[in-house]
Figure 1 (tube, rainbow, N blue to C red):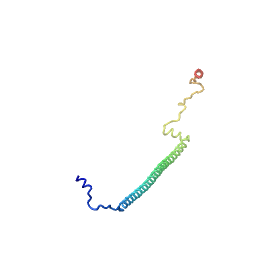
Figure 2 (figure 1 turned 180 degrees about the vertical axis):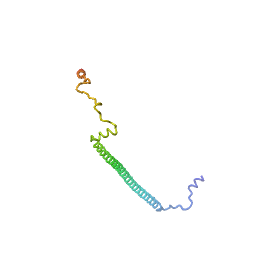
Figure 3 (figure 1 turned 90 degrees about the vertical axis):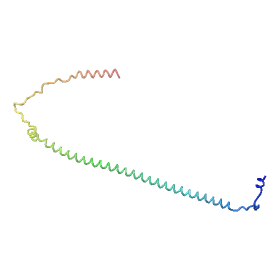
Length: 163
């Protein structure tokens, strides 16, 4: 029973307390804090978006730059190949001209005779060393055309049978 009495017993003033505006101020402060946090979050998100846009722009510029540099390197390589080929063409033309001059030198019959005698140690044949051949006679047997025509006829017969 003592517990019941203690629960019902009120110490001090029993008058109702007046509700003060503390709760409204606290709610307003909470609302203001929430609004401020929302604004800060929106600002952060906007800054992150801007950073992302800047990062994307930098990446695009980097990629375009790499493409341009790679194309220039390809162009430079092709130009180098062209220069090398032109150099080879000039060398081959000069070599070709030298060979044409050599050919012109050897077209002279006296020059050919001189080279044959000096370098190859050839001598002009005498009447004793000359051998005459008569090419009027047929020394070689001519190929038999009848066999070829028979084989053609055999082939034509095979074609007729198959087709």
